Image (tube, rainbow, N blue to C red; front, side, top):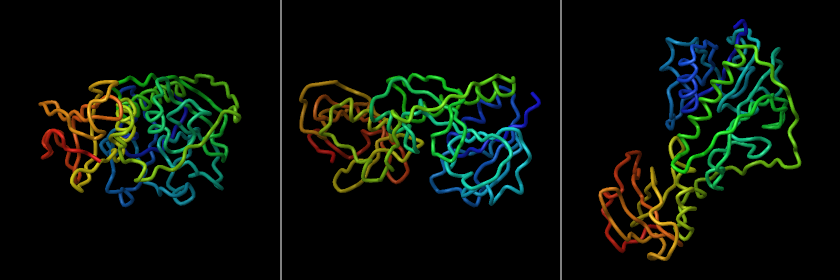
Length: 295
């Protein structure tokens, strides 16, 4: 275990990664966004592990802005980190990135959500060597992850962090990795996700609506819908029925202790929890009644 490893990470993924690295009794250096740059939507706390790891607070913009405070290391690994952070920089060691997909598919920042939207069942992690092309470097390591039907985005992200921690252990054990180039012929980049893209379309099938809600679930900002002009966000849901016409799309067809059953274009979903103004509550606490319509 002679190698010195520096991991750049932040937010929800960073906190989960450090949890698993600590369980494996590994001690890499950690670099994360400085406290002054933490956003209001911060979803994880790296500094919970300040007594377990040496943590460096760095600029989130570029390597050069904080290079003077970073220790000399043998390997850098970036997890949920700015993809062009090292552009134009001179760093004297390999830089690896973890992408939560099986590259060359699903390049870009929206890989987790996009895979849920498309109903992907087998995904994984890819560790690739940074070469200036976003998510386009030589692949060092891949491992598959099954996206279970009950997973939300956070469940999948946590699983990618567990697998990444296991990769870090392999580095410490001097595991040999064979580089291979990506097949650019089958690669594609993902479009930027906009707020308007996160509004639920209840005209879609129940399975599509369910996947849509999972795609934007915590730690993301959640899919939204409107009722009487008020925006609500869908925190958790399940499929009530897969097919059949049960009512107008968006219509509440049943209320029970588990939530609200809402008709879709085909089938229905059980809306379990919603968020309003940052507060999560049981869906049946919405002041809505059978026959009302969500938009």
